[in-house]
Length: 66
Image (cartoon, rainbow, N blue to C red; front, side, top):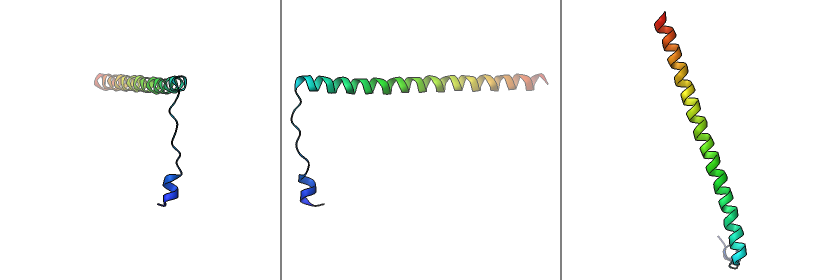
């Protein structure tokens, strides 16, 4: 790696309180969206699991009745 590649990154100025608040709100929005998607996926997997178990029980009942 060359020196100019390392030093080309400019330091960032500290955020003003208003900018920091906006940045934090944006991060919270993304975090909330991710949590919502994770919860929806969890519930979907739970429904699929219950549906599969119900189908297995119905098959077992049908086979035991024969």
